[in-house]
Image (cartoon, rainbow, N blue to C red; front, side):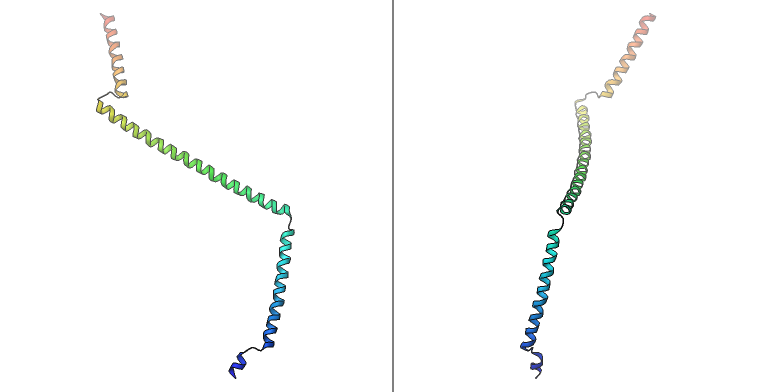
Length: 127
């Protein structure tokens, strides 16, 4: 007897199927109406939306490109500074190993020679 109550009758099943058919038809009708509304939507509105999206994307890409260029410039400046420092250190090391005079030493010697020339000139005038 418990099995009899738990089982659905054919009439109940048919009724359920009819309700599902009606609800399905309502859903399909609603979907068709919504699809038509979307299709009828103004082409201008669609084009305007696409154009606005493209402008936003263009602005975003421009900002990214500018940021990338700035980053590259900063990296270039850091690399150049590093290279200049390394070259300076290398030149200094070569000058020391070859026992060459540095630019400062040559300038100092020029000043000394100029001073000595003035002294000699002054001594020759006095004599």
